[in-house]
Image (cartoon, rainbow, N blue to C red; front, side, top):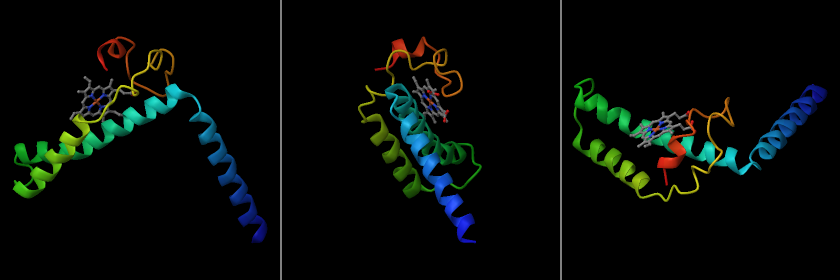
Length: 106
Ligand code: HEM
């Protein structure tokens, strides 16, 4: 049993080392950051869309909270999230961002 536990710990260690190695590429860090930002947007905008469509009941307090969260995201300085070369041509399996979008985003 202890042997199995040790093998699990080694596997976790290797995978943590691999992910921290990957994060050393600043473009990969930027891709992860902007995808996280988009995921937070999606999480907050989803219930607002559902309220607007009548799929869930309108809740003014919840709507205010969700809108406040989206406003916070708009206030973020995202200038580090879109470095040149962090597009889907250079990182085909990591990002959906077309090269052209990088020219438009801050
Ligand atoms: C409420 C507004 C928005 C929502 C809910 C949203 C949602 C999303 C989601 C869910 C993804 C996929 C993330 C992933 O691959 O894990 C995404 C990616 C992306 N979004 Fe948005 N988005 C919003 C606004 C915007 C705006 C305003 C822009 C640009 C003008 C934008 C540009 C992009 C780009 C370029 C990607 C690809 C990122 C990458 O894979 O590197 N999005 N968005």
